[in-house]
Length: 393
Ligand code: LMR
Image 1 (cartoon, rainbow, N blue to C red):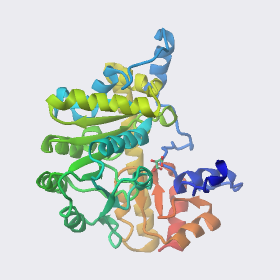
Image 2 (cartoon, helix red, strand yellow):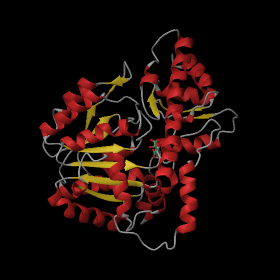
Image 3 (cartoon, rainbow, N blue to C red):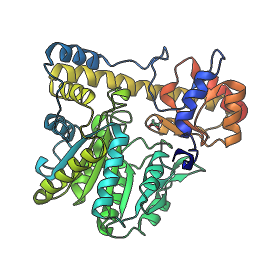
Image 4 (cartoon, protein in one colour):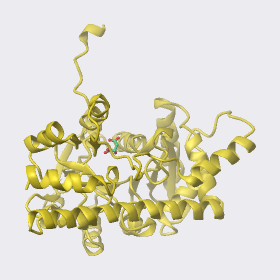
């Protein structure tokens, strides 16, 4: 039977990891996959995570199964982190998932179960795995405008014009903060208008929240999600702990389904059912660490402080890169890098220029010219700026 299989195109983001490893050059710079690196190029285990792991090793008595939807304590801690009381817990069904990708996948599967003909609207562009999973599940899909290639900012008018075409019951996938791949995000006022429009249309928002704490702060980055959860009767939220807890390989995520309290038990049963069909129990180690950190005041403080260091470091790198480019190009055309938020910025280079950056300078970024700011440090910023000024500007 295997001869019937067709070759699969490699995921473009993940392919870069291998290409980078295979490159023998000293001084190569990896700005591909979205992973945070400190000034020494290491993706560190966060201090609070190390402390929680030590405590867990000392105290954990069993590794028997958790609940099929994960541990209720993890649900409660994450609901509070994300929604902070905007919506009562009795309106929120929750399921632990293998990472944020698992949460997106389970969200889409839930939508397909409930409403197989609903169109899922995605931003143009979006994280490539979004359309990939939607297509794989055979769901109807449409795009809304998002990015203004000229300013490298948000095309808000285009976005609103396209979202005006959404039909009642359609799903609109939004990046709660730190848009991937562009780095361009709506302002709070624009978010309010988006929420009003979606409410008026009867749409169901699916918020992908993979970078809470990486943009403007833990609460600031959740503000749009909270606004939407408050404004709309039904909302899905797919959240990842990979980035903000630095536990990428532990595969820790959660899907929240906000609806009316009367329907919660049925939604909850469907979420558990989907886990059972796909992999039974979700991974527990990362979820348990996250729960410990969020519920222990001293671990929580330790985590928040380190997350803030990471966030401010990324902001500093953005400013440094924008300033270098201002100096080298004698123009403000790259100032958008300082205005973008999160790990990524799409810099607007052509695929040929991206290829030249890799071949001639050993600088790796995704083909659409998305660069991972968190892969830079004070020494590599000037090298990147020089390369962009020579090859792109
Ligand atoms: C990224 O976009 O680089 C990250 O979300 C990692 C991934 O899985 O693609």
